[in-house]
Amino acid sequence: MASIIEARNLTKTYNNFIAVQGLNIQVSEGECFGVLGPNGAGKTTALKMLYGTSSITKGELFVLGLNARKNIKKIKREIGVVSQEDGLDFDFSVLDNLLVYSRYFGIPRNQAFKTSKELLRSMHLDNYMDQSVEVLSGGLRRRLVIARALLTEPKVLFLDEPTTGLDPQSRLWIWNLLLGLKRKGITLVLTTHYMEEVERLCDRLVILDKGRTLCEGTPQELISTNIGNEVIEFHVEMSDIDYHLEKIRDRFEYQVFNNKIRLFIPNTVPAKDIMSSVSSDNIIIRRASLDDVFLKVAGYDLNTDIKDL
Image 1: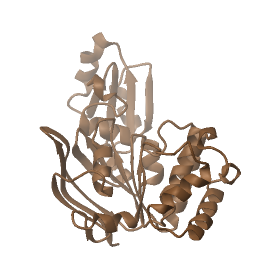
Image 2: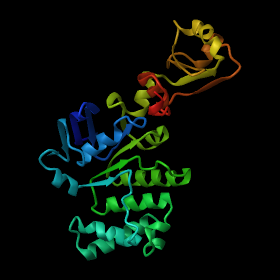
Image 3: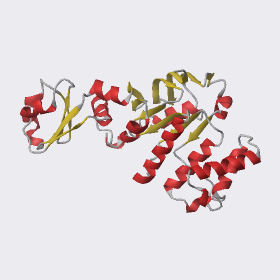
Image 4: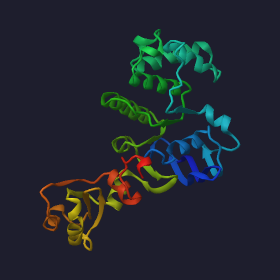
């Protein structure tokens, strides 16, 4: 499939701080590409360079076959953006928020009115058309922002943590919506720190940490290559960690996180065959996940707050 986005050694620095370092990605037409990482990893900065609101310090970027340094205005006409900040105007109704936005792109009013109403119906927001944005819940506002991004019928939709702060029901609704957009052929690029979001939506992803690329591939490739099929997880007393590690140190790959030990089980070794090496009453055998991948390649848990490192 043709590459709709290609970034080569994409780098962003602020004075002496490197926010994104040497990002290399290719996004194929019609796929969902994810950028996964903790808060402070550089996800938003990377996305802003991709959709043209943050300048590129170094590297090359092509979107829809166009050089982003030379053709950013043309590119912006063909893409949609759902940023972390909603940017909705509480002085206008739900419908008027879309109509005002359409003027920035020179969409004729009749066309904008028709398209806006269709989008609001598809987002189940038609009952709120004439009401203030202020009455909408967080999940409904997110739907409105996505509707706004779709006004221009974009070929690529960029979404920066689209479900952060939403309740599980709203999150699931948006996941299903995005899967529907993907089936229509819209290319999706999203940032997230939710593993389940990536595993449900993304064909491929890159994992970032502190501006660096740790690994790239399909979710299953990254899990299989770095971890295997299963993980044995057990808790021990802090004073007994050395005792337990002595049994496994030379036999298996593992990580210690607080008083928890995780054993990464190769695909060729059934987890049950390793149980004799583990002496604990609190043992869990579970399917390997992207969180395990991140823990292994970054050295700390994906859910650890960056300020605690």
